[in-house]
Length: 57
Image (cartoon, rainbow, N blue to C red; front, side, top):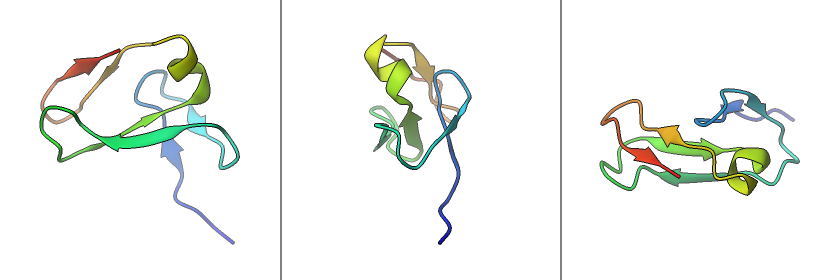
């Protein structure tokens, strides 16, 4: 079984398939999926949309 490797938009690390992560569309443009690892979610690390530049908590 394989899966698409996701990278956290906050810290840049690869997200493990069993990790408590989240993926959601960019709140501003909606065109890019934002991936957040468990650690970045827990500590509210900033992320930036690579398309529109939106910065979120």
